[in-house]
Length: 253
Length: 253
DNA sequence: TTAATAGTGTCTATGAGACAGTATCAA
DNA sequence: TTGATACTGTCTCATAGACACTATTAA
Image: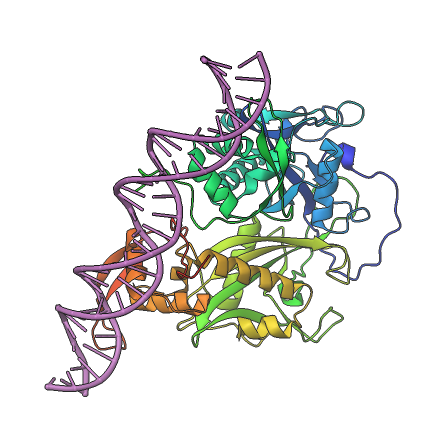
């Protein structure tokens, strides 16, 4: 959040406001963007600029920044804009994670950030780099959580996002949004295994996915393996479906 | 949100701020407070004052208002404060629901609200009334959702809160926070039935609750019935526990 | 033919749902 | 003793998990 690059500099006419004359918190939007790359769950981070007197110069942070009340119709549109600026992705899975606000999280004063949570397929994606934009790159979630040296409270936020993702993966079809279409069931199973960090039984997995009726066949796909697999497309990209039970190995008490 | 009653009027020294000079959205916190009364799920609403030129005068709204960057250390503290002001309840179950923000939700300009979600036991509670405070009262959720004439976008927000509650009730122990302690299993079952809107099997319900290990016995309680029931206390008031499966009648496909 | 991966069949144990039964209180 | 409510036992059936099996491709 609070990167100079996304801060509009042109002057604007003062809007008519009949509201109270008390100081308002700074309002920002940050986006936690996940993908699976190299068999690991990864998160997109930007390096904060070293120029100017901005806080946390040179540290890694979530992509985000101030709400622009001229550009952004609402919070979701603002999140979409920031995601597009960094990744070029137009229609990812996007849901709200929550908001963090307080007196101390930004040294410049009371601030509140609205955090969104995005899942994208990393294949063939071009990240925004150089120029006025800060460097942006993928980082393994496990490394990020271990090093805990992100700007602001973004370490906490990433942790909350990972917990939400891991928890939802147990009982929803969310990981399907981490794959490009058409996707195959073996690919999807692999994503589940990477995010859950444990193997999943093939037969049960297939039954479960097909019973949830969120996939439709698109014909055989010639993958990197020997036998081609059936390709599938998501019936709806709006939301994930919820399974009636959680994934869980039998030893669970 | 944006009620005059919670708006601080005293002057304060301008804080040192090295932040951008672009206009910030108004920032508010609203609280959706649920309870079960008269065998129905109810929500706490306040009537907006008819004085001054505030928007939505005389309409019902969620309790809430501007963040006070002097009083409130963070968003959760702000929500706690607003809850305490209206209900006197000090330590309810409180979780974040989400945030709503946009150019059009408040006629005075771009605004964003951070919404919290509280569950309280309504028994013997005194609501704040009269004086400077707006009238505050319980309303049946079903009526509120049908009439849809709340101030701002609070109708949408209540709807989202009810959906979240009903969905979580299927697989968590959340409803336990709607009862005063010590609670009995028949009482708890009744709450589940009210919120879910359907009967629940007694035997399965008891097995499920006790297997989840979130209750500890406190001795028999002489209720309004003939045979006394075992009283229980929540082992932790921090969070609800998640059941491995959802409640669901057998006919579910 | 073999290796590799895609996909299916089958067995079993768990445990939820349904419901009938027993226990313990007041009147 | 009766009525009312608290609580328990038992039967059945769906299904997740485990794992062995078959199918289809490339080399």
